[in-house]
Length: 355
Image (cartoon, rainbow, N blue to C red; front, side, top):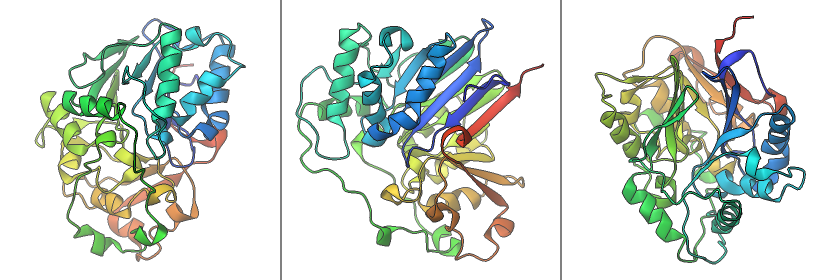
């Protein structure tokens, strides 16, 4: 699981449609370093980050940063598993730093998709071990420099981070139950979906997501959590990127597991890449939407090279998405790959090390 063949790698775990991302890189201090993002549902800790963290500690390394993007259960749930893991004795030294937005006030347990309760567990754990930062993480946060890896915060905005903090101060009264199979667009064809108008996500919790641009040498990657596309576009424009000067990245993780409301045409115009990662499994909340993938493969700004869609999961729902289309892969010049559980989970590795 811990690779030593490339200077940097991005490991996307199959944890049932949530986000669990492991970044490993060979730093400018000639040592290996590790960063985690989210972790997925609580029940998935034993299948993903639990064994990974144990292996990292066994070889004498630690985790530099653990980014907790926001408090949806398919992102924060497994962090509770870490807090409760009795096999890891010295948790304070296992993870040097947490990037996590929180409220200082006690609130009631959530009954919906927002895991305020898990957030409280993590906040109290970090407070106990003097790891809790009181500085909010948002778009005015200075880039984080970590042994040659630069992490620039693209989301949330100051305003949306403040809204999310307010959500901690009241009980969530009406949890979302997700979409049913009949609401899925997987059976619609490409031609039908290509004419669909874009409507953006307005969920305040998704808008509070910590999304980042990771840069290491010549490698750039967009890790977008569940962020709103307009915020990513605005942040990239602040970095002097534009439609005429797009940011060139090795890959972009599509926001909100490939939701149709989180990848706008404007975002695709300001990002130049032929490689996309989707963490949705086609079952949980029916993400990814096929509309999103159609928007990617029919984007007028794409070049003539083949587009690679990397799924962090492997399900019949994902593999059958283009069954209703005739020769979709050939006609639109794209390909799909699907991950396996455990060691076969999707890894994108760059900059091979010289033997």
